[in-house]
Every structure is written in structure tokens, then in C-alpha cells.
Length: 395
Image (tube, rainbow, N blue to C red):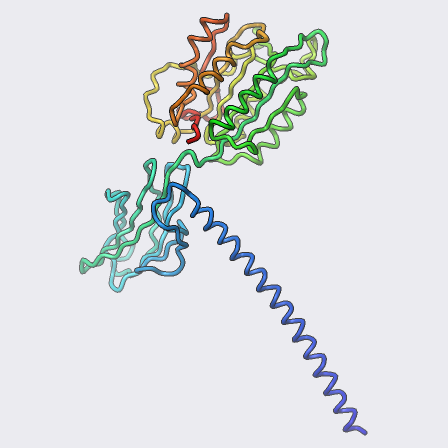
């Protein structure tokens, strides 16, 4: 009897062990699926790289050691960037002591690195490399004490048109306060402008936010949300059309949202609120285009028109610029300023159009056909470093 009970216990334990094993197998299957998902993400990253039209060589993931080199950054043989410099990082291993390491860009010597220890046979090479527009072949060459050379290279394509362009377009023409005259043109003009930058320039539809007759709270709320959306390499355009006011005594300009009251400034949007947000929206370039009558108070300096820097240099430097319609007390409903702004953007045939050149091309036409004197300049105290916003026309 005892033998039967013992045998039955053994059978129960065996069944339990088999059940645990089955559960473990199921869990293992789950882990395998998770790893497959990770692999798929990596494949998606690779496919994005493959789809880059400017890449001149096959894109492969750099895994493991190749000819004595293990690349850490970049991870692929060819990558695309909108930044003017790129940090490369790789581990180089040699069969004998490394005497020095040379770095090249498109065959041109850039710098060399001396190992920290004369007898070292393996070292990490890390260097910020300045790029030229277009393809950059970045090569690391390690030279040993016997004169033996080992080398490896990657391609980094510097293309400013690969950067994100975002736009916040605000148009106000219907006012709640009956003592503020409604307008007829701002929304229509703003829609024309939004369509133009979407179809002819590098602004994707999902990156254009359109506020039609917003309240002050809606404008502030949108700006606040953009703090979490804007990246340091992004380009941001803010467009406003509607009533505004310039307070000479306080030296402050205001936008009038839909809920503005003529005799109570609580819902007016002051320039100071706007510049506070421009200071925390850490884009690479920001351009403000305003068809309103507050313009004078936002500028640190007006355009001197002595800017002869190339597009490459202008894009490299951070900018916070504005183009405004002027400082009149009243904005005409039919905006000559917006008319010529859209006309010059539409007629432009250049691939790259700096905001200062856009302003220069329309300034005289606006002056000749309206009482306004448009203005262009640097927005004060928000981080401008001398660059400019570059409109990039689609191919």
C-alpha cells in the first residue's frame, strides 16, 4: 500500500513538473516575440535610412568589428543629418601599438589624435566633425609604430532640408466685442499662406497648426503645448494676422485675440508673453511674421542689410527673427503686406530663401502700395546668434 502511495506521489510530482515546464515554454515564447519586436524596430530604422535619396552608398548596420574597427556612432554606413556637425565614435584595435590616429573628411585631413599610452593597441576615437553641405566621407585612419595603417569610413549626409519645419498660424477676424471692428481677410489670407508653405515649401501638413479666431487662452495653450513638441534642430514659423495695438507710454505691443475687449486689456496678448514663449521654444530657427500694428517694440535691432553669409553659415547659427507689417495704429482689412509676402514666396525659384532676402524682395512693393513700412529684425533677448530662418523650396 505504501509503495502504491509513493508511486502515486511520484506521478503527481512529475505532472506538476511538466506543467511548470510548459508554462516556462510559454513564457519563453513571449520573450522571443519581444525580441522579434525589437528587431523589427531596428529594421524600420534601417529602412528609413535606405529611403534617403541623397545616400550615395548602400546603407548597412555597423555591427561587430570590421577591419579592426567597431563603430558606435553612427550605427549605419550612411546617415542623414540636418546639423552642421556630427560626433563620430569608434573603437579601433590593432595587432601592435598605435602611434596616432588621423581623421579625414572627403579626403581632407582634419586632425590627429595621440593615444594616451604609447603601448596601447586598442583605443576609443571620439570626435566632433564639422560637415559640408551634401555628402561627407568621414574616415578614421590608425597608424601603428611600424607604419601599418588600418582605416574605416562612414558617410554622413548634411542636408538642411531634412530638418522639421513647423508652423503656428493664427488668424483673427471675428471679435466678440462689438466695439472692435471685424475684419474679412485674415482667415482667407492665412489659409492661402498655409497652403503655399505646405505645397511649395518644406512644411508637412501634420506640422502646421491653424488657429482660426482663437481666444487668448487658446493661443497661450497652444504655445505651451509646443514646448514639448519643438526639438533643438527644428525650425518654427509663427504667423499672426488680426488687430493689434501699440501702447506708446508702456512701450509694449499687443495682439487682439477673439475675446479681446477694447477697454480692458486683460485678454490682450502682450509682446512680453510672446517673447517669453519664444525664449523657451528651443528651435534652431524661429521666424515671426505678423500683420499687426505693434511691430516696433519686439525688435532688438533692425535689418542692416549687410548680411553676406552663405545659406550654410546662416543655417548653422541660431536665429530669432521677425518680419512685421509696420507700426500703424490701424491695420487695413486688405493687407498689402500679406499680398506681397505670398506673391514673393510663390514666385521664388531658389532652393534656399533666407527670411531677410524675402523681406528685402517685398519691402519696396509694400511701401509703394500702402502707408505701411514693413520691418525686419532680431527679436530681443530670446537667443538669436546671428543666423536666419531659411525657407526651403520643395524639389
